Image (cartoon, rainbow, N blue to C red; front, top):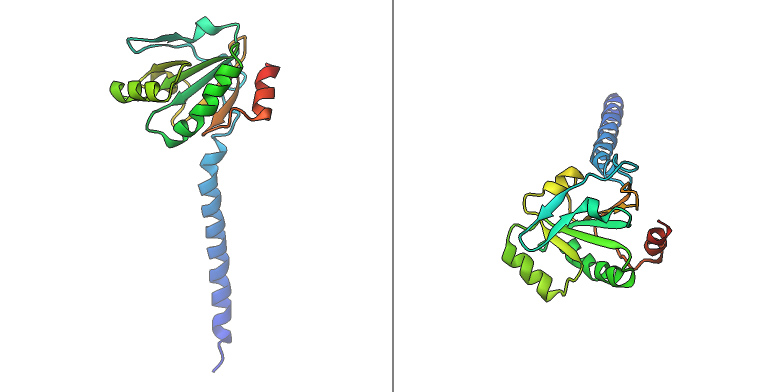
Length: 175
């Protein structure tokens, strides 16, 4: 007995499986395409906000005329913790750059301990309601927006960055 009568059946099954697998891979990658370094807001005026946590108040419009690095972060976020030393170094090396860090932490004590222990001396404010992050459609941490002197969003960085990178530093200086 030969298996030839079944061979076309197996060929027919393989093609749909291959197409199904290819479709599954494309669907899995599609959400990543929407979160690139050039969000829909690139080229638009950055949404203004005022956030106050009782000890610090940040009003974005008051930084007009400066290049702003707007960083959304949290103390419990491993990538945020990873990038904080290079963000602080950037803040120290380029004092004309306004680095604004908006934390989404809900626990004020955990936030305060983090600031003290890590010697965070850049402008940071706690926004547990995530009002500012919602204006920027930020949902993953960290996310950082580069805003030019005219208040226009020029770039979005997703995830931990090495802010000491020569490419990033040159880009920021070019603004």
